[in-house]
Length: 77
Image 1 (cartoon, rainbow, N blue to C red):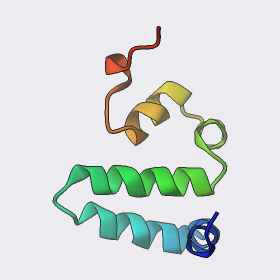
Image 2: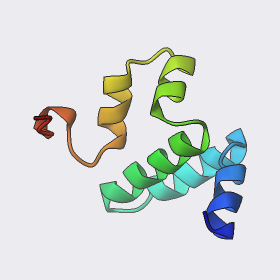
Image 3: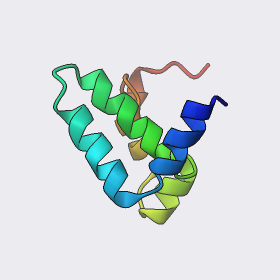
Image 4: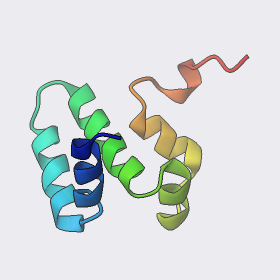
């Protein structure tokens, strides 16, 4: 990882910083910006499986929310 990625991952573990990061991303007109920011926060906090477990969410629902494409459109052959 780069120094910037390490720094960002460290900062995104802080609830206030993560909230500000997501708030700023939500203000962008392109929805993919918020999805990418959400994925950064999830990854910094241990990944989809861990966040789903801690948040008592289904992994499929969280994956669907963090993906630019709905899960039902992904071909898993």
